Image 1 (cartoon, rainbow, N blue to C red):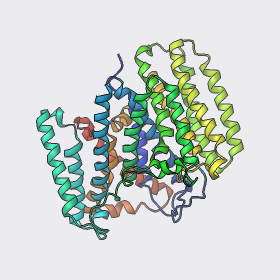
Image 2: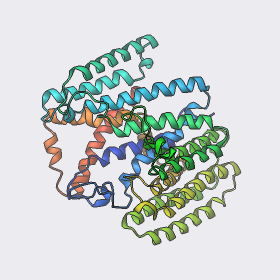
Image 3: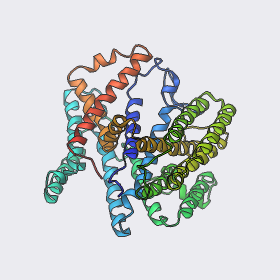
Image 4: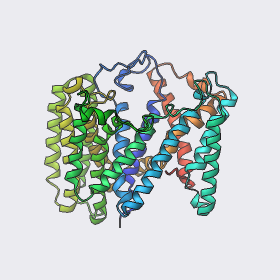
Length: 461
C-alpha cells in the first residue's frame, strides 16, 4: 500500500523551507561571500542588479518548493472528482490569498515604522490568528467546533484589517506576501492543469510552449498575446506573469505521477545498494557543480563536466537488474538530465540564468535539479540510511506554513520582547558567526514547527 505520506518528499520540502528561512536570517552586509545571497542582490549593499547572471543555493529554495508542490498534486487529488477538486481548489486559493494578506499586515515592521511592545504583541497575535484559521482542529474538536473556531479567527482577522492604522496607509490588497501569492496561483492553476491532463501527459507538456509563446510575444502591441499577458480581473491577486512558474510546477506533477507507482514496486529488496548510493552521490555532485559553474560563469567547463557526470549516471542505472525499480529511477533521472541540459542551452538567452527577472534557463535548470535532488532523497529513503536526517526534515516539511511564518510573527517579536535580538546581532562579525546567526534563528523556527507537528496541529488550506 502507498504510504499516506512519502518521507522523501516531505524531507525534500522540509529542507527547502528551512533553507528559505536560513537564507533570510544570515548576516547581511559585506560579511558573507556573494554566493550566500541571491545572485542578483550581492554584498555589500544588496541592491538588486538585474544584469547579474548566475545561480546560488538561495536561488534554488523557491523553485524546489514549487516542484515539491507540483509533485504533491497527483498524490493528493487522484481519487477526487472534478466537482470536488474545483471547489476545494477555489477555497484553497481564497484561503492562501487571505493568508498572504494577514501574514504581511501582521509583521511588526509593517504595523509601525517605529515598532514597540504593542506591535510585537500584535505580531504574535497575528500568528495566533493564523493558527485559529488554518489549523486542523478536527484532531481535537468536532467538525462543527473546528469550523466555529476558524470562523471566529477569520472574524477577528477581518476586524484587525479594518480597525488598525498602518504606517503606509490602511489595509491594502497590494500589501501581500508575493511568495504565498505565487503559491496560491500555482496551487490553483497547476492542480487544474494536472487534473485536466492526468490521462494525457503529452498534452500537459504541450501547454508549456503555449505559455512560453505568450511570454515571448508579450511586447507585440495589439496582439492577443499582449492582451492575454496584461489582462487581470484583479492585478493584486492574479497576473499572467505568475504562470511562468508552471515551467517548474508542471514538471513536478510528473514526479507526482511516478510516485503514485511507488505502491507497485517492492523496494524492500535492493540487491545493488552501492549503485543506488553512487547515483544519489552523483546527483549531489551535479547540484554542486552547477551552483559553482553558473555562479562563477565557467559555462563551457560546467557543461562538459555535466555531460561526464550524466554519462556516469546512465551507465550506473543501466546496471540495475530489478526492472520495476530501474524503470522508476530512470524516469526521474532522464527528466532531470533533459531539463538541466535544456536549461544550460537556454543559458545564453535573456542575458544568462537569473532568478529575477526569471529566465527560461532558470526554470529548466531548477526543474532539472529538482528531479535529481528528489531522486537522491528517494534513494536515501529506500536504502534506509540517514534516518534521523530524513525524519527531522520530513517533520518540518509536513508543516511548511508554520515554518514559513514562525520567524517573522513569533520568533522575531519574542526576541525583541526579551531583548535577546541584540545578542544575536553580535554575531554579525565574520562569515562564520554570520552563518551561525542564521543557523540559530533557523533552529528556533524548526523547534516551533516540530512542536506543532508532534502534537498534530498542521496548517491546512
